[in-house]
Image (cartoon, rainbow, N blue to C red; front, top):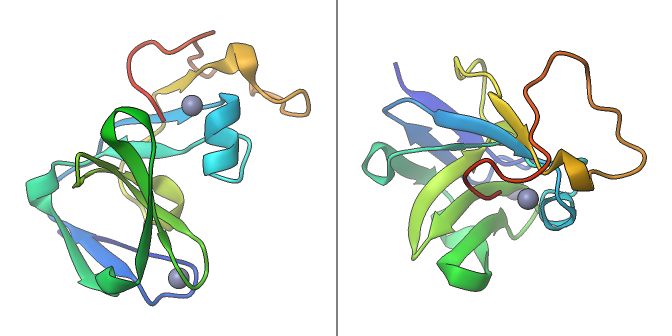
Length: 134
Ligand SMILES: [Zn+2]
Ligand SMILES: [Zn+2]
């Protein structure tokens, strides 16, 4: 079954024909800004299994160091996906419609979480990265 996602204003939508992998939440100060939240909520996709359905021409990109970047809706500002060297690398869990059948497996960089965030008991945490960014 195809998974779909869209931004807040619904001009941009996508579908994923495969599964999401390595769902994670990064609490570092950079991700807090990039995701406008207490942390990222992000999972990897196979670029061959990802397809924009509508509104691809309305994406705005911010490319950071090392070729990693994020893409946003230029109307509503939702962060839809991460890209690496121009290809879709992963998606933000918040923009997925319905149940993507995945759970956040690890919370990373909790050592630099915001002072106001309370990390729930029982989640898998790492003071730093484990492996992976965003
Ligand atoms: Zn939008
Ligand atoms: Zn981070």
